[in-house]
Image 1 (cartoon, rainbow, N blue to C red):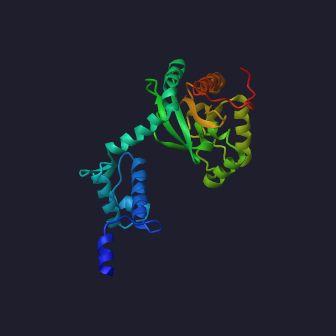
Image 2 (tube, rainbow, N blue to C red):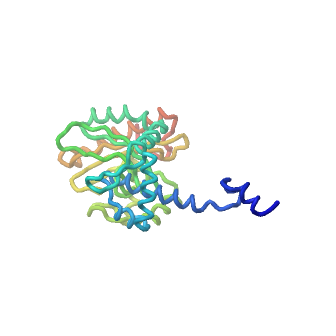
Image 3 (cartoon, one colour):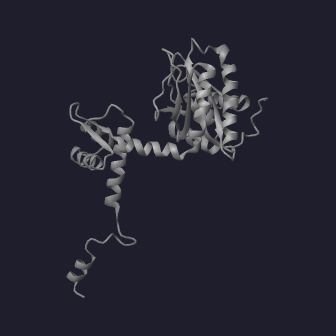
Length: 281
């Protein structure tokens, strides 16, 4: 068979085993990086900002944005000159929440916490060294804690984050420290390994975490972990509000309520609370 005939017959075929698809993979990774940047910025980003963030030429960035736009993942606001996520990306995000049964299971408990406390209740999970908020129940107070769904907070500087971090295996804890460090978000943030370890030991003993203006000045929060069937962290729930309504004297009362609610959710999901939690029922 002539070489020209081989080329003609194989033209358009997908690469066989061992053949490179790095060009397509690189474009996919770059496109996903752009989508992730836009998802983290609800107000949108200009082409020049995106290109700088992902370290690509503006022409390459524009080509990738047009490809994402053609599939309905993003849209361009011509008036403001920025790119934003579109409805298709929103649907994919919602499908993730629907697939995670614990989110749907937790919602009635979040609403009950809000009714019991008069404060905002949240649900979050761990993603690497950060906590990501997936669900919320708000109380219609003029002054209230509002956390945008999908937003993140450092594990060591948030109630939900510390509640999750307290139950991590030692090697995973050390990996988080190495990856993120202990940046000081406010003057109250636990920013040394020793102070954080002591704080996490207290959380394991009492069954709930307290954020005493560690993530935001003027805000108090209590949180407790929801565990899976292995007793490892699945998610965490919290109640948060202004210091004026949640003073130090109220933290224990709310902490016990949140701990009991997290235990209910854990039981509903078929999980188990670790035996090392030494609080009394």
